Length: 145
Image (cartoon, rainbow, N blue to C red):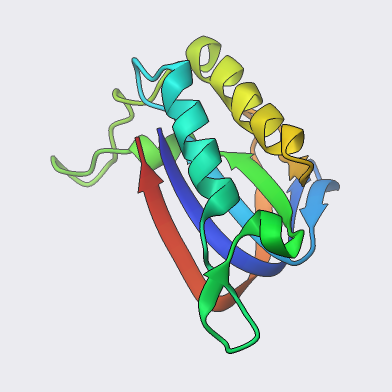
């Protein structure tokens, strides 16, 4: 499981020209799964995301978590995070989990964030999406399990 976590002031995702999800101040998370990923990895990374201290405190130090500041989340499935470009010029996606494996893990990740009381918006799993965001900082962190 691989996440690209971006601190945002706002973000939205469109599918077929219509907004399917949006978030204000908080995080935009691109999430990809590889073959063999398990539910334990989802739990570990969802806990990490909830407590990741990348929001500024009163002194301007990154010392607050998403939960601390009541931030919003936009979660977008992104199988291309497992694109392998080592050979040739076209990425290979053979390491990416097939949809029937990835979808339950994706849903578990979203539900874990919601159970913490976070407002979570999403894209549409497997759809062609257009994502726009304003990266705050910029702050971008890559997490992997």
